[in-house]
Length: 505
Image (cartoon, rainbow, N blue to C red; front, side, top):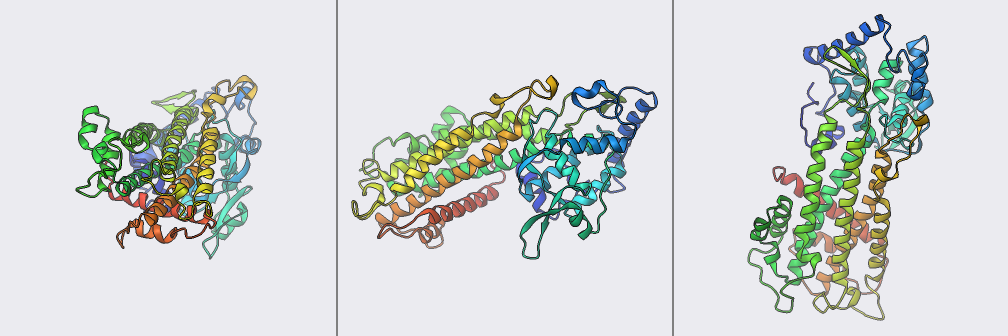
């Protein structure tokens, strides 16, 4: 199976759903994967033949494990999905839903879940056809996996939930799943107990969300590194702060990497403006240390998330002929990574907001007017933009409070330790939207500083495009749209730089 290659970096996992070359196909010649799945299904069959107790198949779910399951495996599977379909909130974006579905396929393919190759292929066929469940974002504690969101995905596959449909205009809308399946020439799937449990018992929703968030924060770090270089160049700052030797003396890889990124954005022989201090404020001088620390944390989290994406998060599992009841569905590895990603993005947004403040203050912006207005008093320049950026950072701090610290026991005491991984990932996603607006605000400030100081960028540079998006402020004007436009440009530029430097890590 081409797609499931071990140790894919997260940038490749995040691209899976957007690349036609990645197909979740189980080729008939892939006998190893088929053999693994058949072997695990055989283990379950033997346990059932021996009338052994099997969670969710012969016994009930959660605290109801003390009771017998329904006589029919189909009734048991349908009941599992039905009672868990209590999720709420707007559906996760289609790309994330595609990645979630793919991750469940990946987990089952490992051969621990007692899912037959035939059933797995039926699921994979629907993924290949582009079928995309509509998955509500709220309602799980992520302890027995992301049960509720995955149950809604399973409902869609069964033709009784909702799914995304893409119109001729390329826009996505949510429609009844039965209609979407029919339009694709696909039949609904009936879930038996074991297959249903294998699908909903997994960390794939919080994992997919955290992967997407992680990659956005990577771009955020690259973006603020680019802006730091531009600010240092415009101000004529002391470039010694970004010298490789400083990083070598400390030995932190992230710091070395970010300093190299900043140096790449500076003129080759840059001299310090004598009006600038020997040592800039920390928001400029310590950018390699701050962004580098974030980068190191992101890379450490990536190791854990990649392992999670390549593992099986099911219960029970079949291992070397045994059926083992355990807790691989507990999303603590994802939850702690998500919390750390949130703390990291706050540091990046805070640094960008401090750089914005530096550019708006005559005491630190090389004597330009306050708030970068050409008409102090008659005009207020970036005063509103800075106030909003301050609000954004405050809200970010509220959102990235570690979700793992908000756990509550539930499920009749069965789930007495829960990670709240998806709650955290959803909050981090919201915080990221605000963090990017802080970056866009800083982009506007960079453009206005350059205009006031008559610093003309090269015609083919990203800074020339930035100047077009936020032209000189002759009079005050609404800047909200310019903040968003600058955000989009800088995000795209950061993504291109990361793509060009694929081997940097």
